[in-house]
Image (tube, rainbow, N blue to C red; front, side):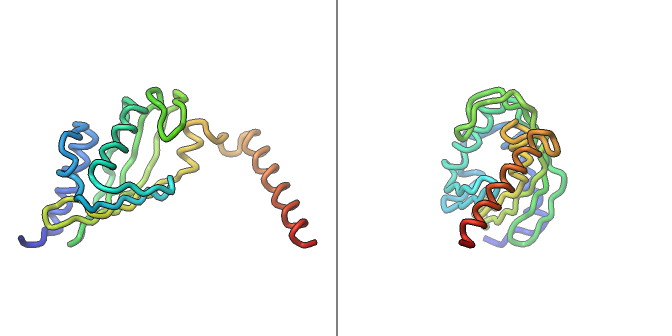
Length: 170
């Protein structure tokens, strides 16, 4: 089988997002992801393996944020895959996710996936980048930036850091 073209890889990236996020189609995870898939979710310090692992991951997101949507802002395709810049939106009103209880808070988060495809167009490698602190602030897990609570957390952190440094210097 011939290697996919750049245009075919862009179309494949858009198809993946359309089926996964617009249609929420997880009936055949191997359509999206190769058996040897490795997904590195940088902000979560988490690696997910294989089609079933990714299907479980997205089933959890959709259960936690019933209105979850992800919009493509740009696709930069190349011979081996594509980089997709996206914006995720949703409201954390459903099930707990990764041990976090739902807060009812809204999410509006930009990010990017860097995907490699096999010759059949399935994702073999995906590295996902987004601002984990922004996610935590938006769902209420961390205080709003520059709020009194944020300044208090920062002051406490800096105090502990100074004390630790003094202890090490002794």
